[in-house]
Image (tube, rainbow, N blue to C red; front, top):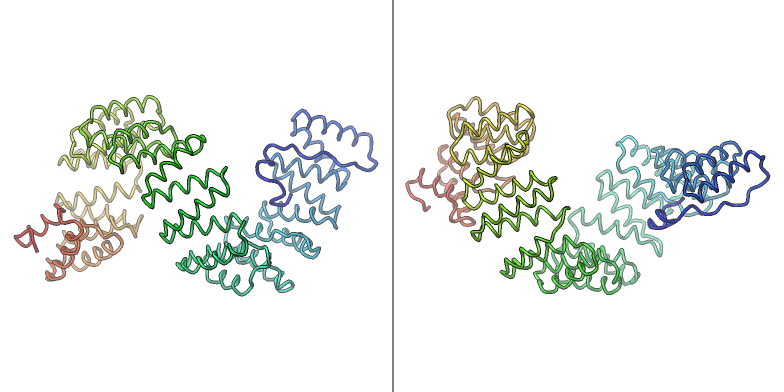
Amino acid sequence: MSPGHTSPAEETTAAPEKPKVYGSFSEDTVFSLLSAELAGQRNRFDIALDNYVTQAINTQDPGISERAFRIAEYLGADQAALDTSLIWAKNAPDDLEAQRAAAIQLARSGRYDDSMVYMEKVLQGKGDTHFDFLALSAADTDQDTRNGLMKSFDRLLARHPKNSQLIFGKALLLQQDGDNQGALTLLENNPPEDGEIAPLLLRARLLQNLNRGKEAIPLLEKSIKKYPDDKRLRLTYARMLVEQDRMDDAKVQFSNLVQQYPEDDELRFSLALVCLEAKAWDEAKGYLEELIARDSHVDSAHLNLGRIAEEKNDPQGALEEYEQVGAGNDYLPAQLRQTDILVTSGRGAEASKRLAAARDEQPDYAIQLYLIEAEIFSANNQGEQAWKVLQQALLQYPDDLNLLYTRAMQAEKRNDLAQMEKDLRAILKRDPDNAMALNALGYTLSDRTTRYAEAKELIEKAHQLNPDDPAVLDSLGWVNFRLGNLDEAERLLRQALERFPDQEVAAHLGEVLWANGKQGEARKIWGKFLKDQPDSPLLRSTIKRLTGSETL
């Protein structure tokens, strides 16, 4: 069956269509087909499929093989769908739908060259080809397979140079290979035929990929004037406005779409999110409440209503919203915000009580809830309470690496380096390539002890695992500084700061520059970061230690 033949809803609810009238068959065949139909009426499609596949093979009849194919596709029986589509195509050489079905099933099974042979028959018969499907289905295959498919496209394009579906399919392949410019040039040199929307959408996406999103806006505006009722164009335009940070314009577009498609709650949710981005709190609230009333995106709506309440300085209202978020993607963010509100307002005991109840109600989230509790207490300078939470959590889950790592970080804050090392070593015993643990232990040994050689070995292993991680580059720079390798330290810390402009990295680089006789540049770097974080204790203490004054 060609893509787009039925809607996904129809595919999952509608039974396969009634059988056609067949020619003269043997008694055994007729009995088998009748049994298949009775089985189908009783929803035993497995029996129906088995009988039909057998008879398709035995009779080679196009009607029976088509029926077998429809049932196989309905059931998601890929091998049976492929086998029966090939029998159908072989015995109905002039039936373009049969040729297309075979082409699509062959593509699904990864046989792209064979698929192109059948799709070319559809092309020659002036039928509706699906070269775009062939290209899209190859997205997850290896490069050699895609190269072979590209050659097949080029071979057909040499014979049918103006076929818009071939051109679009090739553009998709080029995009998959990362050649956005090649795909864009191909589409620009071959404007789509009237009524073809997909190439316009792809052009807009390619421009966005090439950081030329602004150029996509007039292209989409022109296309919308030509096809004012096309939902995909309007939706792409609205999303492109969001990406261009034109929130007010995006709000207008999403609002129009919701008016045009009032039953589409995905659009309504998008509009609510755009209103949030535009800080139009009351408008966003209205759409989110509509979604709850329509029983759609309920958890996300409550989460965002909580955020709106926080923006309006209504912590109690926020808590009431967060409390209503159930298990799913929005559950942990809601628990995090709820805990933060309670702890920062001096209601830590209540936060702990709520989280304990949440762990009982949602045991699958227990570890993450412990981590939230510990991290919020720690962030609010309640280290003792954070420590108690982690001790309790590790009694229950002694082998959890995230809990061990979090306790190690808390131990470092308590100056309990022995406990920190013990926890990080426990992680590395079970996961020797854990780059975070390697880096954390290596950095602490270089910063808080004189075990520099050991520290360097740990950090170098982390660097081999994650060569571009700025935290690892910072650690490697710092241990080189401790070892007196100032030039190497400077090189690594410059790389780290470039990738991650952070006050700690800036403090480290400044100190290395200072030691390397480049005091002017050190002051410049510190000054730049002090502008953004004037109260940074790390920067202030570094500057005071080296210059004798907290000010530059």
